[in-house]
Image (cartoon, rainbow, N blue to C red; front, side):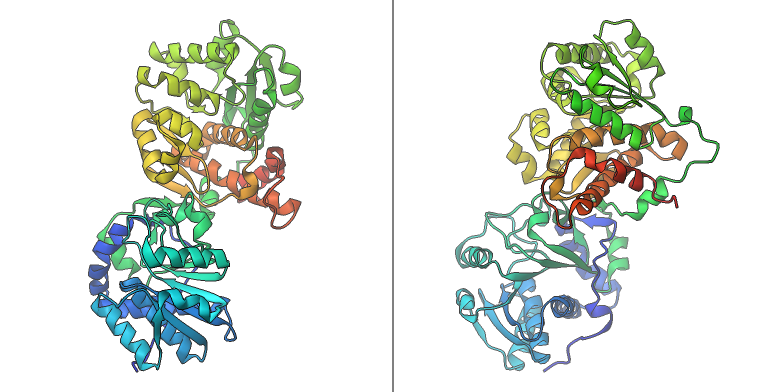
Length: 524
C-alpha cells in the first residue's frame, strides 16, 4: 500500500474562510494548472484532499465510532476512498459504499489504495446495515447541475432521515456550488471541508442550512490558483470592521458625523421608524430627524434624542430639512396608505425632475421598495442610493417569484444592481452587498434575527455609517458593508446574551447596546 499523507500541508484545514470566493467552474478549469505551477500533480492533490478530510473527521469523531464512507464515481469519490484508507490505517471501524465504479484515473487509483488496505466495496444502498455513527459524504462534487435521482437521491434522503453526523467533502451532495440551492435534495452536513478555493454557493441562502461548519483546505496551491483567476465575490471578515471604523478624534463634534433624515412611521407603524432612528443614533449619526405621519409624533419621540416632526410632503419645512440632511432614508413604517403614497410620489417627482436636493446619499427600504417596484419603468438607475430588499421585496422589484430570488441569490443581487444602480443589500442568511466594487457576502447573523424590526434597525445603521463615510475616509460601499456586518454581529451577540443557543424570541431593540459594541471595534 502506498504511504499516505498524515501530516503537514496535505492535511491542514482552517475554519478561517478567506476573503476570496470563487465559482465552481473556476476551480474546475484552473486547479490542474495551479497544481502544475506548484509542482504537484492531480493525484497528489487528491491525496491532499483526502488527508484534509481525514483530519476533520479525526477532530470530530472518535476511534470507537462506526464510519460509513459513501463514494461516487468521480474525483469526489476518490477523495472518499482516501479518507476511508486513512481511517482504516489508523485502526478505525470503517466501511465503504459506492454508487458506481470510479470513472477517472485518479479515483481508480484511490480505490486500489483502499483495496490494498484490505478494504471492501459494498453497494451504496446497503449503508444503513452498518448502523454508522458518522457518514463521510463523497458522492458528488460541484459538477452537478440537475436534480438528484436514482440511488444517490434515495441515499441522500435516507441519510437526512436518519439524522446522522455527516462530514461532506468539498460540498454536500446535491448542493449547487454556485447558487447554494439544493438540487431536488441535498445532504445535511455537520461539517464541510471544501478544497482549493471556497465556492461562493456555500456562503449564502439555503446553503447555510446544509453545509454545517465550513472548513477550508487550500491543498497547498492557493497562491498559484489566485494568480490565475479573479475572485467571483468577497467574504467579509470581522477584522475589516477595525479597518473601516477607526476611533474618532478627541475633538470630534456632531456636525462631522452626519445628519440622517428618515421618512416613515405611518399610523400603526410608528415603531418601525423609531427603531430605525434609534439604530442610526446608536451607530454614531451626529443627528437624526424623523418625519412621521401627523399624530404619531409622541410614539416616535419617546426616544428623546430623536428630532420628530409630523409632516405632509407639501409642508414648506420639508425643503429646509432636506437641505440640512447629509443622508436621506425612506421606508420604515412608510405604509401603503395615502400618507405613504403621497410621500413616495413627492420623492418620485423630485427624482424625475432631477432635483439636486434629492441626489444626497439615500437608503430605501420596506414600503419604499414596494412603491419603487410599481414605479420601476419610470426610473433610470441611480448611483446615490442603497436598496435593502428582503427576498419578497426583491421579487417585486424584479417582477418574479420569491423562489426565483432564492434559487440564485447571487444573480438576483447582480440583476437588481444592474437595473437600479447604487448598492443593493439582498438580506437573508449570508446577506449580499452588491455594488460597483463587486459583490460581498456577510457571514454574520443568526436565526434569532428573523423577527420584526430587524430590517428597520439595519436601515438606520446603514444611514448612520453612510453619513460618517467622509469622516472615516471610507467609500459609501464600504460603509454599507460595515453596517451589514455590525448588524449581524450585534444580532449574534444579543441572542447569545439572552441565552446561549437562542434561535427565537430576540427583539430588534435588543441589538442596541451591541450595536455600540460593534460600531466601536477599536475602542478600549
